Image (cartoon, rainbow, N blue to C red):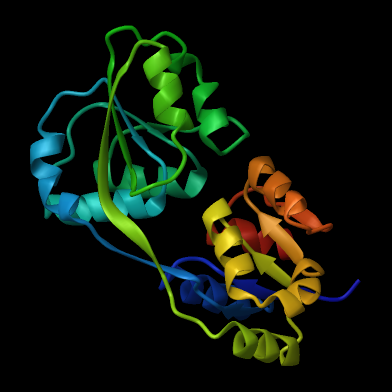
Length: 243
């Protein structure tokens, strides 16, 4: 089996950070951000939103935690029961709040989070979801159906990076890229969008590494045949997988 030569498609600047980390451990990796993130108009509302009382505060991404923490500008996070979708987000949220943060036991996505016993009966509970603009509505819809009053705080949004797909593919082929780390459905679809139709065969022959079975299923539906589910998306967890 050929050694992995990985394309890292995370948001800028996280893609370069992970690529540098993997290369330092002897794993060939190149950063190729497909999307960047920027503040929204909601960013300025953090203090107003987070002065309300919530039974649960849920963070769906590390960017959601980071941008919320930036918006609070040194103000303390409220006391609440905190939850996060995955381990990386849990680490960031605990660091920001200094409070205990629950995560799913194995399936690190909305479905895994919704399986937590604390979210089974929510009549009258108030829940704040920290996320970027857009994304899945499953979490909020299910929590609402279970009786909760759900609000969003969306301090950031994803913005497509303008790329020349033909030039990108040619360069990555010359570099011998044979795999890609894809952390979301949105990034997966952006990759398909960027790569010209004539190069789709090369693209779908890459080994795709994803954080959840849901994203793996989506990749398979888009034409990939070799899709691996990582045990976690922390930098060290990814390095351990390849070592």
